[in-house]
Image 1 (tube, helix red, strand yellow):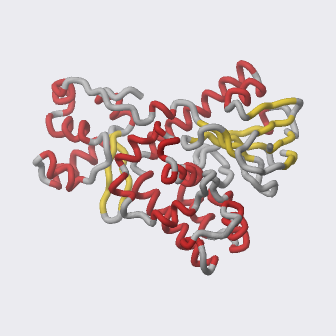
Image 2: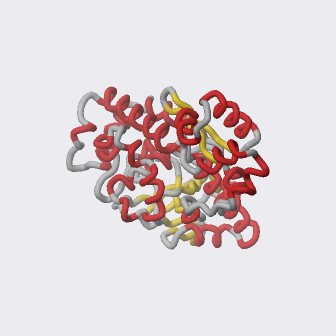
Length: 320
């Protein structure tokens, strides 16, 4: 049981924030127990080939059989607009003693082979593996993930305004309760401590990769609670497309074909081969549709991967 004594019972002591690195780290649980996260099976299938190119032994070693993860890789974010680059930079500079303490907390019986060796080198390997994992499996889908997380934050704010903090905390998880100014979180870990939020506040972090509630296992960490975001079940819903003629009349045959094809990330060269259009022509169309807000893009190695945005999904007919 982790207990946080709220320094004040008003909204000022509680804030919401989103952490890309927390999502990245907690998603590693699906490597060990994909069956416990059935909602993400479509994403796991879509990224199966990409994950074959990752340092899977090291990434898997960042969790244990109880699905704990190192605290330094689930940092307390400072806003709903936290950037992955900033968080990975901070993780790459974590002090060696902190690295060892956090890894030992996850693996008290001894570190797995991928995490052994000089702490400075382990720190670099972990940061590099996570960066590759982000670029390969997360960046193309992050706009969709972030939209679900941000929608959850808006909803929680509405609950506070209508019913108060107690109702909001009760709605986060059955493991979380606010009683007499103390937020109590029942965890699956043996962590037991109580601390005040005075001077630090309490940060609530929605995540797509927890089934209940999580909190740092060390009382030295800033007061933080991670909870399951609403709407995760809709994130990977199968696409429902309107008749192709509707899009063709609106966008033209080539752009309609590109928009329809980009339910999964793809590069311009891949799209050119699939649609029988030159790469230069595809790039011209992609830039125009991205400027119109229909696509998002992310660099992967030497390629740029494109993916439909929420607006593009709505135009094709995918339920949001």
